[in-house]
Length: 133
Image (tube, rainbow, N blue to C red; front, top):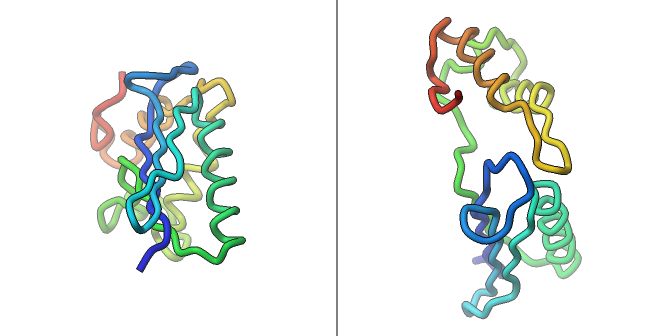
């Protein structure tokens, strides 16, 4: 079904980092042969690696399965709780996240500030994004 399988172990590190607890990208072909193992130091660099990998695969007309170790969705009603009215709801949530989170080339970001603001908007308490300082 797929020609290439790409798995990404993402990182929330707030500074460039390689090795343990950092970003890892692995790609294999349908026979399980390793095509790529990368350990970029930043999310910015990882996006470039993935962009190149996917562009090359598209040029070869390959079908790619791309997996990350973080969720892509939120519970039903989340967009409404944030006060978003755009349709479809999933797109409104992703657009809101993209417009608020700043993630610099050096891995500095404001995700905890955004999470705290989302908590205020959704529950006016320290949830659902409880993993922030």
